[in-house]
Image (cartoon, rainbow, N blue to C red; front, side):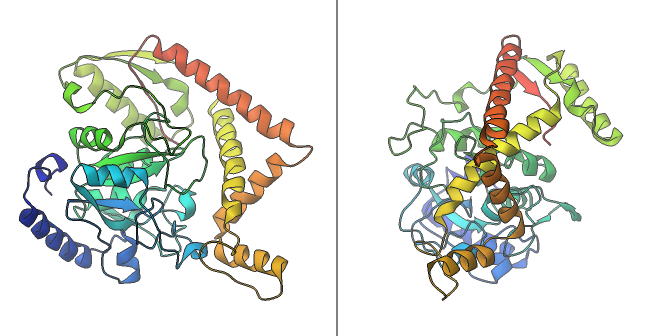
Length: 377
């Protein structure tokens, strides 16, 4: 597959030819990386630029955007997300709706209402999630590059499982305007590409301050791509206790990767952090609490499907019960619980305090290294 860097040099006619070739490949591919594959429909297109697969949670004008949930089937986006506008300005264009876990809640892309995405390297293995469709499409050679979203690893984990490059930008560097929210204080749009240079190119395109996003960082943005240097030697921290409970096969693979970095001339320092159980618990409490608030808007009044004909309460109950899948319902219930009277201080506030401790520990670690290397759970 042609790289993003190469595709950006092509003429309009050459890009059109690549799109036709991609359509044919997608038609004959069975990974389920695209929603269109799972629904036997024509690939969604918008614009004449370099084709980029778009996770089905990012709004593209005049596209059906469903977050792979029954509750949003029939919804047609009236506007472009800021990241889509940035793609268009740079000569790129949305091409295909990448499959995902429903509302980005999952880590295997099997909670999608359309069906499961398979790992293109081994159909018996998971593609990861929630951006499994984005990663699988790039890995299968049916996308030049893709956009995904990452809340707690939803770009990085499927990229690792599928053998491609996935990056979660620093929070606030990429606008969330037009991206359906799961956990507002954690969500970020990130690139999924064939190589590191393409990831840097795509990141540079989508990054930047956006007045329409109140959480967008209003800082100077330096381009990453011109500063890439494969010969630069780095100090990299390895968080040892993050893999202490992993299987022997995972630990061996991780240690092999660390050894490869050492052999390449990088300096490795070993660190430990908070118990991973505390970190994971904090994540789930914060994320589900924010999700329960964000998903309250999907009630049958304004968006997508509406069920129930027995009055307002019946409409709410039937719409949510039939529209949301089991995983989404579970996370909404957990989020509502930790925010409820009597439990707010015991769970949500405590989780936010642990989150601050995690941030402080990372700040200390980054004072002595460039990168931190760990297992994404």
